[in-house]
Image (cartoon, rainbow, N blue to C red; front, side, top):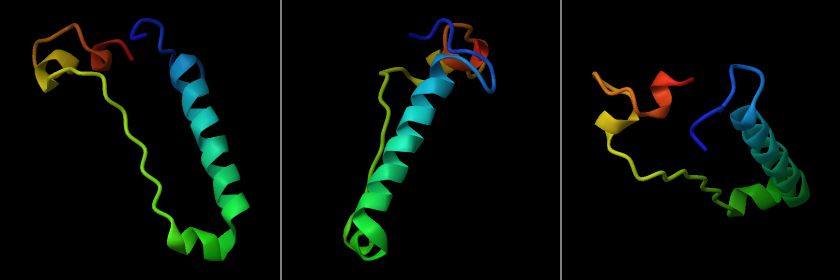
Length: 67
C-alpha cells in the first residue's frame, strides 16, 4: 500500500480520502443539524510503525519519504 500513494491532487491516497470526505458529508447531511449534536465521529488510521520507521530522521522506509 505504501508504494504509489500518488502526489498532491491524484493517486490512491487522494481517492481514499475523497471517499472518506464524501461519506462523512453524507452522514452529516443525513443526521441533520440537530442530530450531529448527539453524535461523536472518530476516524483513525493504524499502520503499526514507529516514528523512526515512518520517515523521520535518517529512515528511508516510511511513507513520509515517498510522498
